[in-house]
Image 1 (cartoon, one colour):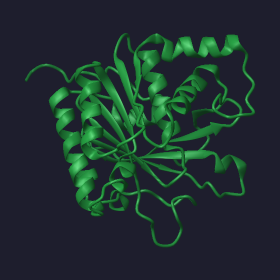
Image 2 (cartoon, rainbow, N blue to C red):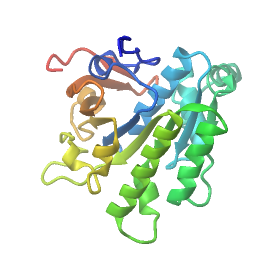
Image 3 (cartoon, rainbow, N blue to C red):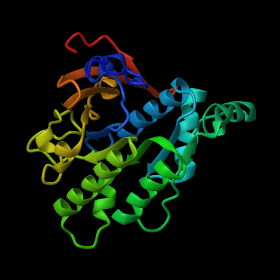
Length: 272
């Protein structure tokens, strides 16, 4: 009881987010939410790459259900190459590709889930448990729970979301992993999230289990239809729930560079 609180072993790659969250802790369920096509997967990849470069030997498990394993692999390699290797017009030499592979997937700490076939809830849960227990993955990324729920036959989205979030929460408690999962938002009245509408816990899909069972909920906001190029490529991260410190609110602004394919923190927005 008299021991100081242990610091997080891993920080987020963005200082503004660390100021509110105090980093990534074992045994946490972190949910990232945003409108469709607003950079959730890229945000996850930046965290993955940061963990690869800032821990000694922890393994990482990736379940990116909206894309092929090849696309996931090239997207991770892109971060090391500072080039969007997954795009057809990106030129890269054999040496650049080899160097990017050796710096990411070649380390032997990243495990990818080939999801060809069933995405039933129990199948995904079993894969997460296998990564945690058999492959010793301490950081697991699931993108996204909404696609798992939409594949269910019973048609009851709220019930399915409750089921998968409860089971994911149990795995986190059981194994002590840090689990990052992505969830979509309900369509808002008026301006959509694709036009920069603010995220909130009330906008999470389902009965509220996502917000209740998550230790941390991070919302991403971007006006993907803005006439201003910089605004169109700037994402704002907001902490919606923070069980650790209780600190919430706007955290940081992140600019996506189409040339490098990287998302980096910008400090030009004085309101953050």
